[in-house]
Length: 467
Ligand SMILES: NC(=O)c1ccc[n+]([C@@H]2O[C@H](COP(=O)([O-])OP(=O)(O)OC[C@H]3O[C@@H](n4cnc5c(N)ncnc54)[C@H](O)[C@@H]3O)[C@@H](O)[C@H]2O)c1
Image (spheres, rainbow, N blue to C red):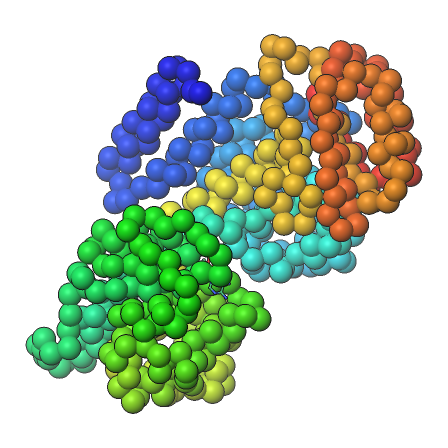
């Protein structure tokens, strides 16, 4: 139950977020809220610092957002920032000296590069994907990896709302016509979206955000998901994909890329849709059978489509890249009317970038300062509550990462058992396991001895003591 003071603090947080954004075109209350919550928690709790490591050094590449730089500098970490990625040789040289590294999609953290990382404890991927990092090798070296899978959900949902209206009004065609000198004022087959039905396939982070936005425009919302999910607003879950297809004027896909979702919409599914319906996809390129979509559009069965993602996408920006060499049907697709094509920009907004900076920056800081691995993509998720500044002044936190083999905990607890173990939590994932323990009433000499004893144990991958 929140105290009156906590409620007041929360209200102040919201008021400040609103005041700060008074002159902004738009703001992201989520991010300022997150940031302030984190800051206020830091003030009340004991600030842990590393034992037997130098000051924390962070290397940030690929123009990681300023929000992350601010978080790290406020912590007193030494931050080295580069706008671009680094070549392998430069990366190997730099990575050998830092405790944390922040990257986006271009920096490849291969086994060869990571093998040179002597002090590295954590990697932040300031993006969604993590396949640029050898996750297994990182885990085997005791390096946790974090990313930000959901910071851009709202941005994707807003793009879809925009496209639903744009498709219903044939906005893309009217705009191209006028850009090329043609005045074509028509109302035939142009519709309001009010009262129409939006069918959402995949009611996760993006699908559910979209549902709320769509209802505020007067759309009826149906959704289909493999899991039973509680509906938001007046939206209704349907039992089968076919039911959703047969009842929706707009069908939008928000599923992950899996074997089950490959070509989830193909010829039979397009046939099951209403005549004159629209299809939208901002999830993954493989989930729609695009040649079948082209056929459905050409036949007039569908009245339009909006695609943001494709089975193969160019690795960089530039002209002459979206051609048949990339996907054999591209020339046919671009020639169709009322088809909106965007270059995978669903999540690409300033707000999403700064929210990613806050989310990953906060995850890294919590891992460095407190050992919390919640949200890590390659580690068991373990955390203990932050230490109380007054009551737990002489408490040391042990972060012990080890190979997941029988007998390790017995050895470790034999050592820890000589002290007062306040709390302890451990979990394993595959070949590695992670233990956090808070030991109270311990002086500096004993911390050194504890560190030495734990360092000598077999199957240890890495050890950090925070006090
Ligand atoms: N275009 C962009 O820029 C952009 C940005 C962010 C995310 N995405 C993509 O959007 C998609 C959705 O992202 P999210 O964050 O909402 O994911 P999420 O994991 O929160 O939600 C996905 C939902 O799909 C459901 N699902 C899984 N398999 C299904 C199936 N076979 N049939 C029906 N439902 C199924 C899941 O149960 C879940 O509820 C992902 O593919 C993601 O990669 C694209």
